[in-house]
Length: 483
Image (cartoon, rainbow, N blue to C red; front, side, top):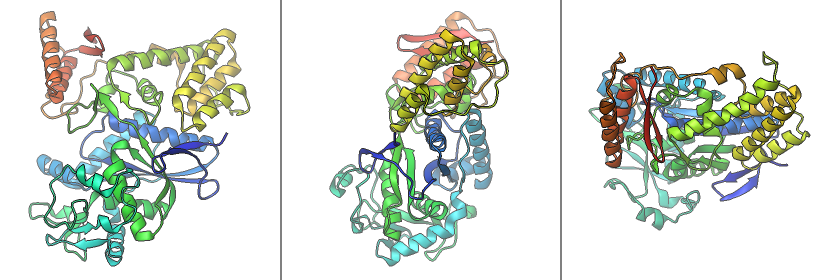
C-alpha cells in the first residue's frame, strides 16, 4: 500500500512520494523558546517524531528540519524581566527543551536552525519581495507584506480576503496599506536591548515571525520541499503568510504537503500559556513515566484533538502495562537486537496498512494489542520480538518489561516557577489534615470554574509539594499520598 497523507492545502488524502527519489525533506515550525515546554508542545513534536520514524521505516532517507525562534517580543520581555541576556535565556530554554524531548524519546531533528543565525537570508528575501512589489516600507520604519498583491492568499485556510478581514482580531496600524498586511521587518524600539537589533537597508530592527520560517526552510531544504508541518493553530496566519512570502519570492510553492496536528485540550479549551491552563512536560513527568506520556500522545491520531487529564494518563499506563506484560511472558530476560520486520507478515502488513493511511496510530496500536493477545496465548518469543519491533516504529516497547511494570512515581518536588508565575513551592513534605486537603481541592475547583487556571495549577503544585497527588476524572477529583 502507498503512503497517503492528509494535505491541509488540498483538504484531501493524497498519495505521497518525495520530490527527490528516496529522500524526504520536511520542515516543522518549532518552539519560541522563552519558557519551558508544555504538553501541547510535546504533542506537536511527538506527532512529527512519529511521522519521521515512519518515513524512515518506509525506507526513505529523511532530512527533518525543526527551527528555533530565538528572537520575539515575548523573549525580549522575559529576558528583561529576569535581568539576563536574550542569548542566556534562549540557551537555557533550548537546553531544557532538549532534555524534555530526550526524556520522551523524541528523536532530534536533522537540523535545528536558530532564527538569529539566518538574518542575512531573511533580509535577502525581504529585498526580493520589495523588488517585486510585494513589500513596502511604512512610515514607522517597518517593512510590510502587501497581502492583496499576492493572488493566492487564503488558499491554505480556504478563506477569501474579505472573510479573513472580517475575522481580524488585532488593531490595525496606520502604517499598513491594508489591515491584512503583516510585518516582515520590525524597526528597532528605543527600549529594546542592543542584542535585539540588526543593521539592515531599512535601518536597525529585527525580523517578523513569519519571514523567519520562510527564510530558514528555503536555506536548509531548498525553494520547494516535501512536507511542511506544525500545529493546527499555525495554519492561519503563520503558514498562510509563509506561503505568500516564499511563493512570492521564488514563484514556487514552498511545500507540496501541509500537515497539521490537533490541539491538546483541558476542560474543552486549547492548552496554552496565554490561558494559563498548561502543564509543563517536567510537571507531568513528576507523576508519570516517560513512556506512558509518549503512549498517551501517540495512540490518538495526530490530527485529532487530545484531551488531557490524569484519568487519561492512568488509562494509558494500564494499557501499556498490557503490552509489556505480554513481552515479559515471552521475551528473553535481556532484549536482543531489534528484529528485522518482514512486512509481508500478516501482523506487520496490518500495522503498515494502518500507518500508511495518514499515519494511523490508533489502528496501528490496535494491531499491537491484538498481537500482544496472541503472544499471551502462545508465549511465542518470535511474536514477542515482532511486537517489540513494531512498537519501535512508534518509539514504544523498547525498555525492559520488568522495569516498566515495577515503576512507581517519585515524590519529587516540582521546581519553583516551573508551572507558571507565583508558584512558590516548599522543598519539604509535611503532614496535612484531611479537611485542609479537601479545602484546597475545593479552592482549586472554584479557580477552574472561574477559568483561573494559573491559580488552579498553583494549588495543585503546592499539594504535590506536600506529598498529595490529585487525580482528575469526569466524576471529580480524588487524592492520594505519594510520599
